[in-house]
Each structure stands twice: as structure tokens, then as C-alpha cells.
Amino acid sequence: MLTRLSIRNIVLIEALDLEFSNGLGVLTGETGAGKSILLDALGLVLGNRADSGLVRGGEERASVTATFEFARLPKGVADALDEAQIELEPGEPLLIRRQLRADGGSKAFINDQPVGVALLRMIAPLLVELHGQHDDRGLVNPRGHLQLLDRYAGADTQEMARLYRRWREAEASLASVRERVASAAEEQDLLLAHLTELTALEPVAGEEARLADARATMQKGEKLADELEELRSLWDGSDSPLAALRIAARRLDRIAQEHPLLADALAAIDRAVIEAGEAEDKLRAAAEALLFDPAALEAAETRLFDLRAIARKHRCEVDALPAKMREFRAALDMIEGGEAELDALEAEVREARAEFEAAAARLHEQRLAAAGRLDAAVAAELVPLKLDAARFRTRVDALPPERWSAAGADAVEFLIATNPGADFAPLTKIASGGELSRFILALKVALAEEGGAATVIFDEIDRGVGGAVASAIGERLARLAAGGQMLVVTHSPQVAAKGDHQYLIHKASSGIVTRTSVHLLDTQGRQEEIARMLSGAEITAEARGQADRLLARL
Image 1 (tube, rainbow, N blue to C red):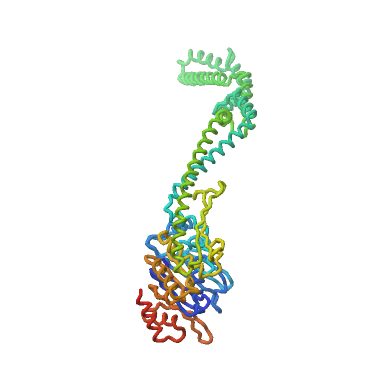
Image 2 (image 1 turned 90 degrees about the vertical axis):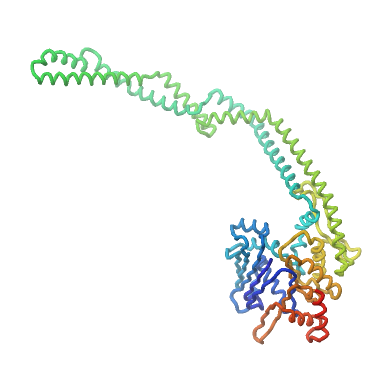
């Protein structure tokens, strides 16, 4: 609920701090005292358009801060704040501040974090329900009538939404498969050609790397073949270096015993023979390793070029060609097996739609029955509110299929006819602001158990009425305010006397500066103010006595 409102430099208000409580709070004061300024100020924190004309003359800026406290933050508000990444601790007050500049600029904050005005407008209906003479929100707005009627009817709207989602998801799946089958059918000949070409080639993952390595090895062998052949001729034969070394070793072996140096020389030559032999073995092994078949090289190159060419054709890597084959086969299988899948999905869509339609038909009947009860409940409230000539109707219209939604197949709107024989029209067509407020009050009473904003404000709901009607209005306001919070701007002493708290709005002028102030009245203050409302400028003893009697009826 709204617990505090702080206003700085708004029109005639220089500085004002108001605290509010549960129950029915009434705001009274002489005409022109500035009651509308309070509502304009509150409207700013609810996201209304910033008007630089609201900034007090001679000041550069103005501000309004509203404090709301809840045992548990309304879910819609909590969700909106989470999305805006604004964190509130459990039990922490919600502070909304709006700043205005005389040049027309404005800023908005929630718990000192800057936010867009759109966020204020989003959460405002869950915080404050404001009913004024030109109100286009709350119960007047047709967009909320369906939800109100469903809550009144106790309808299971979650099941309706589930069936709708199931139907639409089945339709989406059907549309997707239809598109894939149609696309595949259009390309059937091309798919067959691609698959035939790839099947003939039979690409294998990793084949490109193996072919490239083999090709490179064979190409190296081709380049080194002549060199290896010349080297081999040097090592082969009787006049090769190795043969010469072996002859020298045999000759030296015969005389090595004659001198130690000869023995050392023989050992060196033996080592040379061994090393040369190892070199000969390695040359032979290299020649064998690099030995290639020209036909094999040509085959590897042809295969590699074919694979790379077809990969370029399909704009993929060579290793992705096996996956391409599977893709083409799946697309062709879709054409062959798609009809069966389509038949199954079409049956699923028909079944889901039938379930939705059946549930929507049941909900339609439930809404019609609830509409009749609501109409009777509102009609019972119209007579004591001096609207006995008016009629109220909850219109439930069946929608065409293209307008069906998760809420079902109906459109709901509250209509009224203010005079006998007059056509029913939306609530917003009422000419009189006072009549509109009383219709809203009748609706609020009828829908008393169906929830709404945490704080409800009525602006001059008693305009143009008095006596028993004003007393009936006051009684209903007090009843609605029980366990909640309601604020009422009123000129009626009968309504004011029903309040749990009363605030006096007063405008005073020093001849140079005019200021508006607001005071919470005590018991004696309430007696004086209600007496003034009864008698006018001059408060008489009789007026005070009548005020006491009104207050005593609480």
C-alpha cells in the first residue's frame, strides 16, 4: 500500500510529506484548495506525462516520491523489477521518485536506480487504481474486463492457456514439416543427382589427409630416384669405395702386427668399413621406401582432385562429404516418408484444436453464467447510488478463430446504458464524471473479492449527490476499504464521516505567495471540517452537532 507521499515544488505545494495508513482515507477541503494537485503529483510517479507547468513558479525543478510497502510484493511488480534488474530485499519498501525540470525534462527512479517511464506505467496498475472523471484505466479499460470476469467466475484459465499452447505448437510443427517436405520435393531431381555422384565417389572421413600424405611421399620419390640410382652405382661393384676399404683392411691385417701404429690404422679402417656398410644399408632402405608406382601416384592425385572438386561444389570440407550424403538421403527419405508424418501431425492438430474448442465452449458458458450474476450484483448496487435508471451489462462475444488466444474464444466488455431506452455503450462513453465514478464503485463492490491494485483512489465520486446517496457511497467505500487501502477526494460530509483518516487540504495566500498544505485531522479537527462541509463558511453549533452525529455512526 501507499505509505508516504513527498512532494517538492509542485504548483502550489512548496514542500509536503504525507503519511497514509490502511483503511479509508478521505481528503477534503474547499474548492480550489489543491486536491487535484495531489492527484497530479501522484500521477507523476505512476508514469503520467511530465508537464513542465507542474513545476512551482520560480523553481528550476520539482520532485515527487511515493513509498509503497507490502508484506509481499505483487507478482507482476516483482517480475517487472526482476526484468529491469532492480533488486529489493524482502520487506524493503518500494520507492518511486520522479523529478521534473522547468525546461520540460524529467527523470524516474525506483529505489534510487534510474528507470524508464515505461516501467512506471507497467507497474502502476498493480500499485494504484485511480478513478477520476476522465479515467481510462482500471475497471474502465476493456483490456482487463475478461480477466475480471474470469476471476469472478472462478474459471480455470491456466488449463485454457495450456490447451491453446498445445494446439499452436502442433500447428507450428505441422507447418515446419510441410515446409521441409515441400522444399525437398522441389529439389528431388537435384538431390538424386547429388547423391548418385557422391555414392559413386564414396568419400570417407579422413581420406583427404591420407591421400595428400601418400601423394607427397610419392612425389618426393620421383624427384630423388635418379640421385639414389647414381649413389647406388657408387657403392656397388668392385671399384666402389666400400670395396676399396675392404681390400685395404685385408692387406693391412697381414702387417698390422708389425707395428702398433699399423694396428691402430687397421682399427680405424675397420670402423670405416662398418660405417660405410651402415650407410649402404640406409641408402638401400631409403630407395625402397621412396620406390613408387607412377600409376599409383596418378590414381592418388585423381582421387584427391575429384574429392576436392565435389567439396567445392557443395561448399564444404572434404571430410564433410559423408555427412552431405546422409543429408541428401534424409531429404529424399523425407519425401518418401513425409506424407505419413504429415498425416500424423494433421491428426494431432485436429485433436488439439478439438480439445481447445471444447474447453473454450465450456468456458464461454461459464462466462455467460458469471456475466448474468455480475449484472445482477451491479444492478443491486445502482439503486442506492442514485443510478436506478441505468442498466449494466457484461457483454460476452464469441470471437472468430483468427482472434482466439490463450484466454479462449471470447471478448468481454462492461457496458452501460444511463437512461431507459438508451443503447448500451462502453463505460468511457459516460458524460458525467460523477456517474462514471459511481458505476466504478458499484463494480468494485460487486467484484470486491476479485482483487485489484493495492491502493484505490476515487476522485469526487460523490459529485452531484448528497443525503442518502452520499451516505450509501460512504458505506460502500468503507466496506471496500476494510483490510485494504482506499483514498477518496470528497466534498460530501456523509462520505468524509465514513473515513478512518481524514486529511484537510488548505490553500493560504500571503498576498505574494500562495501555498497549499495538507494536514491529518484529529477528532476535533474532523468535527470542525465536517461541520464546515455541512454549513459553509460560517460554522454553526447546529452544524457541529450534525457533524458529531455523522461521526458517531461510525
